[in-house]
Length: 499
Picture 1 (spheres, one colour):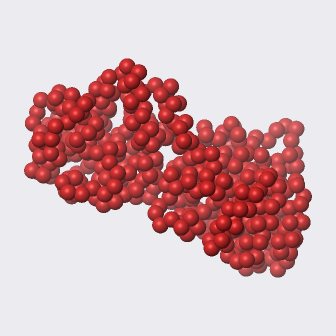
Picture 2 (picture 1 turned 180 degrees about the vertical axis):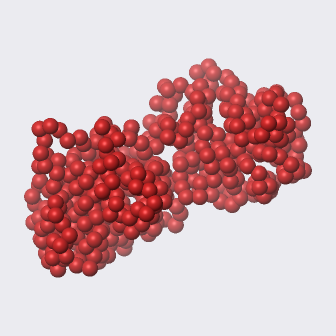
């Protein structure tokens, strides 16, 4: 079975989990060479789809099981009348296990990659390393990668482009840039992570691993999922016939000063559109008139300082609060954040709310840890994630999981592939966000979506996953020319698809 992108299964496996799935399947009685034959057949199928009739294909085989898949594909392609050449990094190095069996079934020659004229081929199959290596490639392996990339010929990668880490999407030159990647059973995180993903088009094939094996390996150490409505649809709030606005929650969005009020209003509009029964913008005195001039269905309430915000949130019907958009990075914001965390409301900390604690992270951690009632969600974009968590690398599932566990809250690491992490170890990777979302204020709307769903009683992880997916779906539905104000207004169109 081959899956298109829109139909990928939601379960994502780390390379080590995939290796365990292979091991358990073989242990249960399926010979490893049979799994390799099925994988190789999938590679041959995809290669044939990319090749012209009687085209020339170079299969570059590595020393492990990835290379074994390549030998199987080479044999099957030759049997189908394609002109096949097999090259290896070191043809004289003996293979082991199932890879040796697969190589023995290939009756043709195996040339040295360094001696191969790669320019003569229509397609190159990269069966060098796949998931079998991490870190920077050097020596003959690096020379091989550079030869393939320099040929300017389409590449079909087996499992993943050689030199690319499928566990966390890191790239260190050199690495293969593939036109298409064929992988097996379930996707790996690196297949989904952006930007600059070198996998090209992803094709997923099944090779006979059972659902029981999947359940065993996927549930270890917290699941990684593709963010899809199947992850959160059952918990999504649907208005009931006997409900009313007070049963759908009351979201509060804390406004910045008079010159920085728009971000809070974008968040408030998002919370209202996603279904919160009531939404109030909490406004400092100098911003009341500015906010009043723009608000209609959204209510407005003045507060003065942290004590005033505490009085406002003392009404326990106000059950979710968003703070950060336009708040300013300063001590006043810090005090307001700590007051929000001391309330019984769910709290979404966005932008300035997080950055105000860059130099006093322990203070924020202590306040979150001390919170008795209500969930907490952090929504840093990539720059804020790096700065707040003092991480010079890129966001990855492992890093987001570590920070969510450390902070004891949900972390939404925003980016081209937003990663949502829960403190219990669950991870969701979102892939439906178009580049048009890179516009001022779109993150404020996302924070509002999360806040509005929390107000309606959705769990923090599911609310975050749903909000991120809806955010991307809204942008895709609107198309080019998107600005942040468009996102809440097109949300009803997206939500109608759930009916």
